[in-house]
Amino acid sequence: MKKHYLDQYHRMMRFYDRMKEICEKHYEIDNIHDQLIGAESTLIGSNKPALVYTSGDMLELIQKYIDTNNVIEELADMIYAFFQNCYHLKDWIKADRPKLKDEVENIFNDRFLFGIRTKAQSGLDNGVIKDDLSITEAQCNLNNGIIMDDLSQDFRDNGFSLSDCASVSIKKPDNEWLITDGNNSFIARKQKVRKQKGELKIYEDCNKYPDILCMKICADLCNGSKHCELKAERIDKNTDVNEWVRKAHLDIINGKIAFYHVYKIRADIYTFDVIELAENCIERWNLFMKDNSLPIN
Image (cartoon, rainbow, N blue to C red; front, side, top):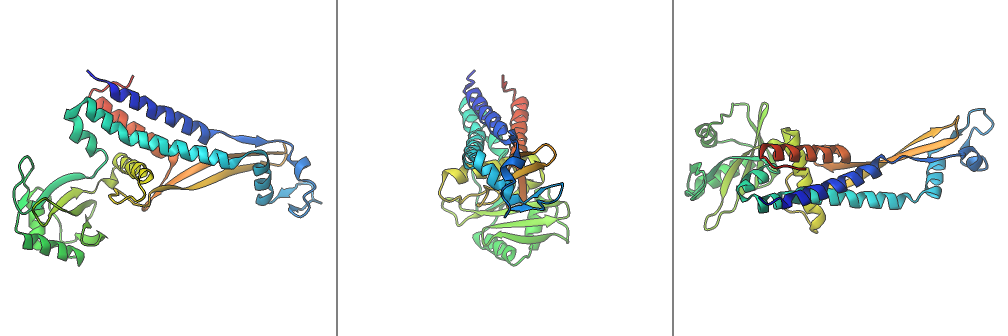
């Protein structure tokens, strides 16, 4: 059987190893007293036994001895390379194992529950069949924060009940709504269908599952870095590697500065350390491989 997906899996892991190596590298600068003692304008308490340096002193010295801009740029390149290869591993798996097409796509998306459409579609779970007016009315009410009795009945008919406490919030006006009912949450999404005005698809909101959340962020990072504008986001169209922190420690007694870099990824209300996010994605892929008898060695 074809195992071309292994090439992509190992390529992804090589980018991860390099990314982690850069993130975990600690830099040290020795003899800082000799190098800062003359900086009277930025040296605080120079007449005291324990010298206290400003953050500006440390930053200036770090930038003097280490080209941090190159470190930051190389790490950013590795981050994008990892998540692009992580996301596109699915394409290699689908090429080798076509029967896994739907399963491999599901790990990047909310779980589809049922559809409300105007006519049956061959090969699909037909869900609920209604006329265009009924679907349009349901969408208008969702825009106004109202769950119609008919929509609640549609949920019950498909095995999902909504209580009287269920509420609606708009994610995208006229297109996407979040229905929250206690610990349960659902996504109602309007989607165009050929030769029809549209249909309403109901999904389980899978952001409460950390593995799927991480894979959805991975997809947004990959597609957002490939295209000028991310239009079909899974979490946030502004998902990006948009925060990095230099963690520095000043060792007064031994006269050293030690520092390393931490990258954060923000997506909507979620924030992840880049290594944590990458390891969650790798763990999810490893579980998928195991469940589908795909060796990774």
